[in-house]
Each structure stands twice: as structure tokens, then as C-alpha cells.
Length: 149
Image 1 (cartoon, rainbow, N blue to C red):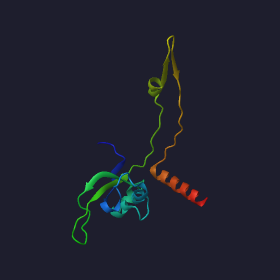
Image 2: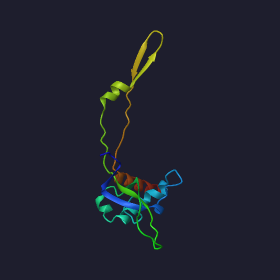
Image 3: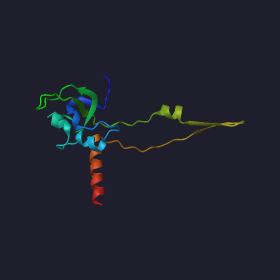
Image 4: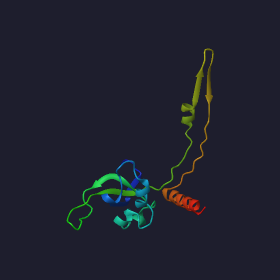
């Protein structure tokens, strides 16, 4: 089974085509992201799948790229298509030290006519990983703080 950034077993919804903006490119995050995340009435995933918020820890959905032929019939009898959206994964990424990277990829060789010098530079990059839900909370708090000041 290929790995994805989403899990349809934790939540699946069909998003009506007219509800989100996919064209023109690039992706319109300011318009679409609030429609695909959070626990507000604006999130289209729980609107189209009643158990979505209960089963999806991230409270966010990602479009899978699959189009669904029929969502519902309009009053005029025509059918609308939609996009499949599934629960976005909400897990930590575990960091670990890879000793093979240091040994194989971190050597800088300089050569002149008389000598070859190998210099190894170690780079330390601090990183913090949070879940999607924690990140959304941090972003929300950051924006509220900036708006208040």
C-alpha cells in the first residue's frame, strides 16, 4: 500500500467542484485552506461527512486528486461532480542521527599541486516538529497576538 499524506479510513468527504478554487494556478491557499480545515462551519469536510471531525484528529482534509462523478442532483436535475478529500495525517515525524550522512556526504576536498586537504564541517540545524493541529493552533495564536499589537 503506498503511503500518502492522508488516510481515507479516518475520514472521507466529497467536496463540490464549485466550492474551492483550483484554477487559475497557483493554489489559492487563502481561499481554500479555511474550507478544508478546522472545526468551524466553514470546513467543507464535516459538512459533507458527518463523522469527519470525530474520526479525523487533524480536523483537516486533503484533496486526493480523485474526482467523483456525482455528488448530488441539483434542483434543475443536473448532476455536479466533486473532489475526494480525506483526513490529513496528524503525526509527529521522528528525527534521528544518520551516521552514514556524516561519513559519505560531508567531506569537502580541495586540491592544489602539492596537497589534498579534506575538511569536514558539521552543521547543526535545530528543528521542532508539531502535529498539524498543534501547528494550526500556534499559527492562530500568533496571528491573534500580532493583530492585538
